[in-house]
Length: 119
Image (cartoon, rainbow, N blue to C red; front, side, top):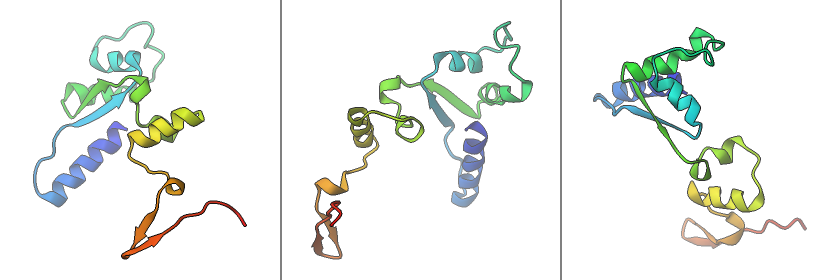
């Protein structure tokens, strides 16, 4: 995620011809966030290959910022996990997706009724 975020940040800087803000990566794993912020290698993290410590270097060089987001409001969960019906609806509302079956859509000035029933 850090590599892609930095690449997108550089691309946007070139296109917009101005400096972009520092990328913020939000995650719900406190242990992973602690590893990115602590420059000391511990016995628990020595099994992690060096190339996976790229995020730590990015944080040290102030290219990205990592912050904790509680799991119950982690917006990415709807895209990465199998959720129950109630949790799915909560996450769907959190990211701003509307239920097409529950609303009337308007297309070019005309009302369009969506029916999800198979006839």
